[in-house]
Amino acid sequence: MARIIKSGLIQMSLPLTEGEGTVKEICDAMVQKHIPYIIEAGEKGVQILCLQEIFNTPYFCPGQDRKWYASAEAVPGPTTELLATYAKKYQMVIIVPIYEKEQEGVLYNTAAVIDADGTYLGKYRKNHIPQTSGFWEKFFFKPGNLGYPVFQTKYAKIGVYICYDRHFPDGARCLGLNGAEIVYNPSATVQGLSQYLWKLEQPAHAVANGYFMGCINRVGVEKPWNLGKFYGNSYFVNPRGQIFACASEDNDELLVADFDLDMIEEVRGTWQFFRDRRPETYGRLTEL
Image (cartoon, rainbow, N blue to C red; front, side, top):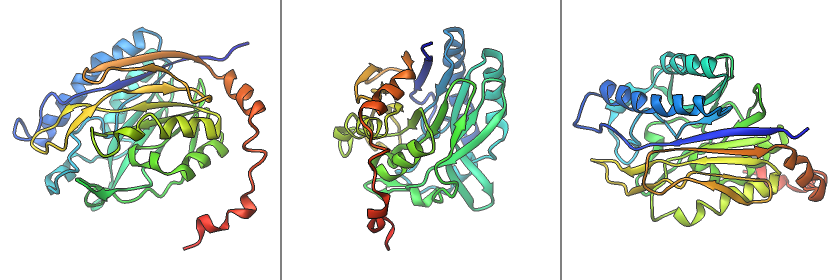
């Protein structure tokens, strides 16, 4: 029997930005803007839904303003608990990328995974933290320390890779070896520097590891930082590297697609990349 999954991705622009409210008001407005889209996903029968990187805040990393530390919260915490109510109501797995506060001064770029019954399954913390060209993330985030976990949800085994992580094939391979069937990559990426890689790297990860990917990007220009235009184009890609559903460049949007997880076995049975690996020859990858 085919294993058909209905999955959704939400790309979103800011309703409020710096200067238009307090940090809390800006975050609350972003959550409230997402709620109708989350409800729409549930009513459309979406089984696994993923939101964008640090979904309830601006992408504040072009600056270095400490006030945004106040937008971090515990994971699990208030926002994951709120979204767990929608997960349970609609029997929908939700991946919640959020700014995590473990303790004072210990902050991570994190994605929580909530199962279809509202249970918190765990979290992934972004491992690769950029510090270049306006992406001053080391000011805000510690590197992840949880490895590359894969979560057994009601519908599929899923992994998470966050934004800049996508430039590193090593973690993408770890997710495959750990059993991921779908890897979600919530991102915040703008026109210019890396746009030509957006539809190149992640299809390559999908092919090299024989899994599906859901790739999410923001939309719009976020003032006062003016880093550039977040160009949307959220998409799904299959284990053959084919992009089979893609969102717009400019609009707030829920992208929904159906796909058959049985393709994973078919593709891996043709391309035996896991069988033919030679890890004993790869020592150089972990040498300092």
